[in-house]
Length: 153
Image (cartoon, rainbow, N blue to C red):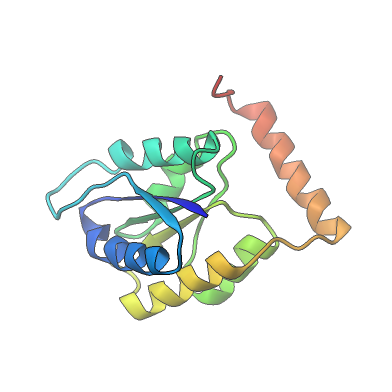
């Protein structure tokens, strides 16, 4: 699977840890940065990463900032992105099963590396439920996305 990764200065260490695990599992990681701990603007990195997922250049994204919400707010402005903030594996599982979230956002200042890895592993391993009620609900959200956001083309 092709995974887009992005972060700000608060997420560099956690991103690098998750990136190493993803690569060890055979995933191709496209790292949009940042690559150090210098203060930076999150949107400079998250927006290009989110666009790569929306355009199909990457299959999913994992973004790490201080709390996770900044990444989710930026990513969810892009049509076709369904970003979630997860702070435990249960949330990660449900975000995939019920909502087919294609971007995971984590807070490097909120959760430690052991918990973050458990969240990422759960999120990567979980597929959406196929029961009609879940498909219907996801289709409604996709329709809202289509009606109220602008196409990339």
